[in-house]
Amino acid sequence: MGEIAINPIHNVHKKYRTVNLVNTYIFTPPITYNTYIGGISASVSSASSLATKLGISVGAISNFTVVGSDIKCKITGSYAMPVNCWNSNSVITYFRDYDGLVTSIGAGGIDDYGQCYEWYFPNCLSIAKTNSNYSFHNNHTQGVVLYTPRCTDWGGTQGADGGMFLNIGNALDAKGFTIYAPIAQQTSNAGGVEGDLAAAIVGGYNTLKFVSNFTVPNPVTTLVAGTVYNTAIQLNFTAPSSTNTIEYYECWSNGVFKNKINASGGYITGLTASTSYDITVYAVDIFMNRSLVSNMVTQSTINYSYTDTDANAYTSARAITNPSSIEADYVLITQLKSNSLYTKIQSGYTFKGTTISTHKYNFKNPVDTDAGFRLVAGGSGNTYSELGYNGNGTGYLDSKFIPSANQTVNSNGITIVVGTNNTPAADVREVGSYVSNSQVSLIGVKINNTTYNRRSWINGTIIEQTGVNEARGVFTGVKTSSTVQKLFRNGSSIVTGNSAGTLPNISQWIGALNAGGSPYGYSNQRIQIILFHEGLSDAEASTLYSVIDLSEAIAGRKTW
Image 1 (cartoon, helix red, strand yellow):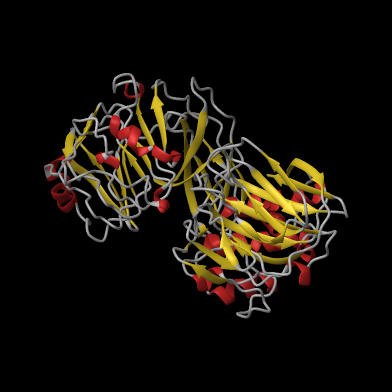
Image 2 (spheres, one colour):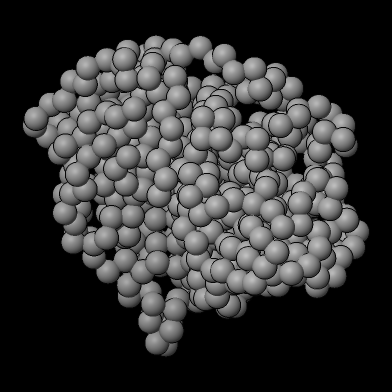
């Protein structure tokens, strides 16, 4: 992999970052919190209101603390979550019961909720439902994790219609739901999967993980800080030993969960400039077994001033305010320049902010015109967030970028960054335009729900990698001569082929293929960056990946 050139922002970090204060012992503070609930502080803002919500004595709650929109506290004693506890709650974002105090969930206890992405109940034994009062019914949040590895009672019956999880597999925008269940539930229904669980994965939209081992990983003991930014700090450590494969590491600062990273070298994100943080991590394995806390490192962020005029113009046009998003885009643009790639990008979108107005601008020319290649929404169901753009299988964006008018037939390409691994409903494409088999430019990262092909089709010949069920990552398709095209994933070439043809004379669409002016193959993946560019050498494609990887890590959006 090619090295990234170090620009002044890195030199500033190296010169001025503070000295790490690393303890040589395992940091195990007194347990002051064991329950963390996100997004609810506006309505559940006191110990008494939480006690009422959970149906427990207020005396069982201590250390109640509000952290922004979230709350944390220590609860003493086990309890049953009441009927309809979080029913139709549109703001809750997570519920983590780290000591496993919740023993059961009443009917409708977690029903028709809004944006919660994680329910963590390690000792919950039963989840109730009635014919009209389900749990996990009509959820419309992608990538939800339900951790109930000891639950043996899923509503009292096998539930042929899936009652417990009714509609989560039918609503397209609810795909990517992962349920952790006991290994015994794999054969509890006359040798087959428990009925409600089986119904939840009909169509392949959601995932069951059967927990067979509760051995926790060893803790990280060598945590140190690496490169420091305004809003992110790199974390380096030696991976601890573990009976089961470690899947990710939780990053915490000042006792607050921030984000997950896949390995050493990742970044804790969402921080504030010129602020000191006490940072720890937890190793989490494939069964969501969680280690003891790591050693603690104390590190301050810096306060670097953004001076690049192109990056600042992009921020100004979108009027975005999230500090991590601003810094991530600044690093992307300045690193592209430092590595002689910026001039090769012809149009680029980083999909930050929460509206089409913040997503639509091309960072090479951030003006609100078709000539500036601003994005125009089509179809329905488009969603815009700090995490990226999602057409939800019914929407798309017209880039107004016409390959034949703006690219060279023997030197052109597309790069797409995808943060989800959702199962597509059918034959899909993430970006591109098609006039004929010899006049086409597209990429599909997971084009169907059976063979899971990754496909690049640049100017005439399909090249693809088949049988790979992973859509997350940075994909670059290029044509570099009259015959050669390549597809890269995360900086490495995965397939090469011959290609001859012409460039499409219609605009590139994002979230679906522009097939002669009509959408084809709506994607349901979350798209985080799109670049239209010249052809790139292997070294340039590798460097482009490294630049994007760093930027997305700072943004807190890296999932690969």
